[in-house]
Image (cartoon, rainbow, N blue to C red):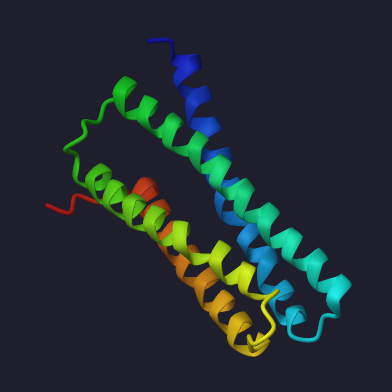
Length: 147
């Protein structure tokens, strides 16, 4: 295997991690503005949320693809403890991500919804997702021998 190619895969993997996690930190101050936003501002903020979710989803595809190649081409096996733990958390985060943001964002346009509750739910959802991603990142960087 080509040393340069493997290092390039690591670079792609790291960039996709940054693109998956980073934008969610931008959303935290935006959540505060949702409570007081007028209709035109609300649409702009919600479009930003949807864009960040879409960006994270697509960079997650690159992340999984590059990670798969790194395991196949690298010195680790699928049964390596940190790889197994990362995959378990990855699957948990996929299920969480699928139901976490889009349904809540759609509720902002319903008339009988309380914005404070929706923004609190979004804030909590963002932090939970960031935590899941950071735990995965910890396993990938530290590579602990769990068992």
